[in-house]
Length: 408
Image 1 (cartoon, rainbow, N blue to C red):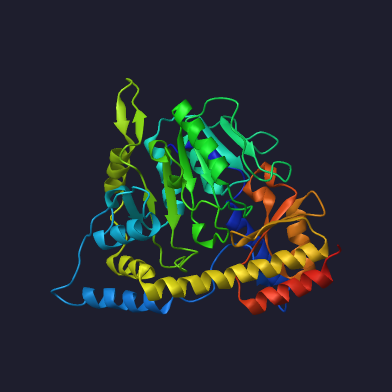
Image 2 (cartoon, one colour):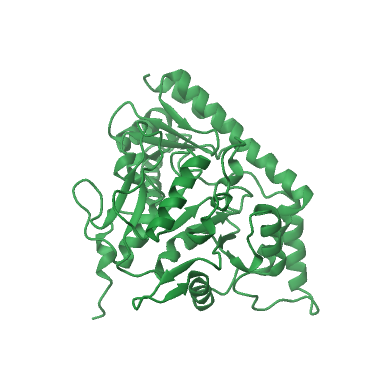
């Protein structure tokens, strides 16, 4: 009989979002007349921008003509998209187009990146965090079993809470890989320029590599908040950045993202030889990925046209207005509320310590679905995430139900 990878057996319960789906389906079956409003999973509701759809169609039409048909494309992405990314997202930051790797999602990239690092690498992760960071390192075998508190032996957890303004503190020990996310999912909070500079300095001093998830950078509204870690001097020596078109341009069902790996970023072999991280990621990419489809990349490139930028900005503004409505209403209700200013997520302190209990209360009393903070890690317990990805009508209805259906 084939042996399995026992590390998968260390994973706790089910993945967060399928578990939410299971509970909601069970509630719906028992309450068939309930009108459930889902503000849990951060999935978009607005259709693709007109410019994107037009470009998508042109890409498909190209595939229908002999003289413009495309077979296998470059695994790293077509030049027209990589160049557009550099010219628009990293202007003046010294990023080259061949340092950009187009993919089918930053979830995949942030989960796969750990493969190119030693199994002995010591990993530091903000807590609460996007579950992929922890789970993929558990699957790879970098951790021991989970203990009673829900943490895994071998991971250095960096707690985020209202006492430290949801900003991770430097580890007291040297670590190899550091997962940072700004704007943060799930808390909706951001890291300042000075905070990021502190992390870059730490990484360079300790020969660490920062895995910087900026999938929500387009939602930043405050001008003094960095959108890229490469705005910080020295970051190209110690950081990899992940970005996505999923939430910013509504590509959750289309699938397109990219990862930036600077050519000057180095790791070390077991013999002490310096090795290019860029070359390793390129090899991994070419071996395990055949590239995002041509029509999808044409659609993504349209985001950077003048019309495309304006249309995408309209959608971002729509969701951020939702976030403002949620944030203000919950504050008026008496909740301690965070996020929702530079990110489409509002993070609230629950009136009871059990965040899954609050999930059930919200679902049963208001027929509204959110995400329990405990699902993002032990430090998420006692908090709750509401997503601004909904129609204005549903957001308004959900907020009214919360006003009337939950005690202050």
